[in-house]
Image (cartoon, rainbow, N blue to C red; front, top):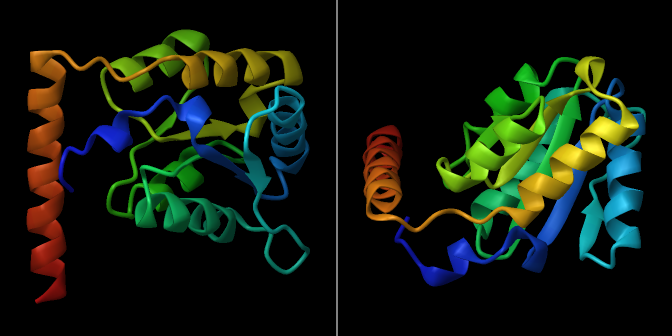
Length: 167
């Protein structure tokens, strides 16, 4: 991935994809309605009884973010948050971080360029998840020399791995 300016747009300017498995469905719906009420461009990923597991939900979010990280970001949950984080991070250009509190959400954006927020429904409630989402969406990646140097190195690793997996 090349460091393009559109990748660093505020997350609030992107289409926010929201999903969650059967454990996180209620909190995912809370997040969706909360963001919609704020007038943000938010889309709930497909949910039905056959497509409810964390792998499917994480794939729906990560696939779109990976295909166009300048346009999309995501929020997705499962019971403990580890499953969706693992699945999302299999995709190129996806930087998924499980955040249990506002401090983690802030650091995930400032330092680690997180474009997918994951959560464990077992560890959250409506008020807490709203606060985490607010801070995550309102925090921009810090374009400091140190952070951009790290991000460039991450992009290089990603490019090398993608090439090696194709051969």
